[in-house]
Length: 256
Image (cartoon, rainbow, N blue to C red; front, side, top):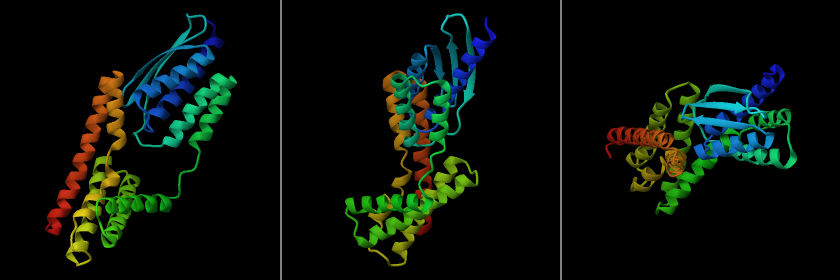
């Protein structure tokens, strides 16, 4: 067993684990993670066996001669959503095939993708709040209710970001956000800013809806990744419960 050959396999293994954990923690389905990792490995001339769970990846890479191999386990960070990173890695995996990228070039591309700047916080808050106001209009809200939905969504998302920044439990952060958004939309009615709270209340918490976990859950179940599908589905249900809890507490306080 060549030490130099094992070192090369280990380097490829670390790179593939980087790719897998980045995809898994940024909103990719289990099937997409496996397909992308296998695509890169095959383009480099290696075989891999990959076990994916919701919180870790286990990878075995077999060398070109079929006898040298290495295995590692990597814990995935808390899951979020960054489709820019997911699509960037997917495009990069095709470039590995078409342009014959080396491991060093792949690692450079990974560094570039992970260092891409996020949108400014104020832009994110404003656009998400605008989406909330737009949903309010779609369900029949008037201009006053749209303004209330905008403010409620803006400050609800702000509270959630602050809670996550302070390292609160993610589900508790959702409770805080749901409670804050509902308090604002509920108090607007109590203070006489609108005749009804129905539309603003219904749309001010829509930014918290766990669409990605539910979509990935269904995708995983249909792909046969049953365990991951169940875990993601339960995660989505807990998020929905956290939204409902914050909504209920705020409505009780506002007497709605």
